[in-house]
Image (cartoon, rainbow, N blue to C red; front, side, top):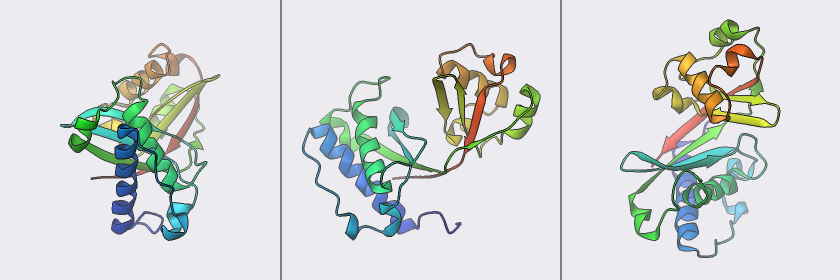
Length: 190
């Protein structure tokens, strides 16, 4: 474990905060204020997370952010609520489902621009299973977490699906120089 990663105890505590957000949010109850001064120092620092909810191994919601803009604790808790209630791909999580939902947190590094010269160079520079990617064309952008490599291990398929997610033709990355950023995640789950 590198020193910038959370300790096992911090991971458990962050998952507990996300679980709290999920439970209060789904039940429509007011969220208790975070006592930031009682939390580990890294929880008070800005952090960017994606929170993924699964039910019986199937995706049930996933929402997050690429850049840190609030405390890590707030970010994980709020994204758990958003994944349960605001992921347009799924109906809202219902109170009777809460006990069946598993939470995964992906803590992101800050995305960095990836300089590349054409499609072959892009394929050579991305690292399957390691890098999350952001592709951008004008105001449109899309991302896949590194975990998506498990379902799309071929870099060509990965980039095709990412362009489709952005609402463009799958082969856009071959025909046009897109803005590309890479990031890594520290992933842990209940």
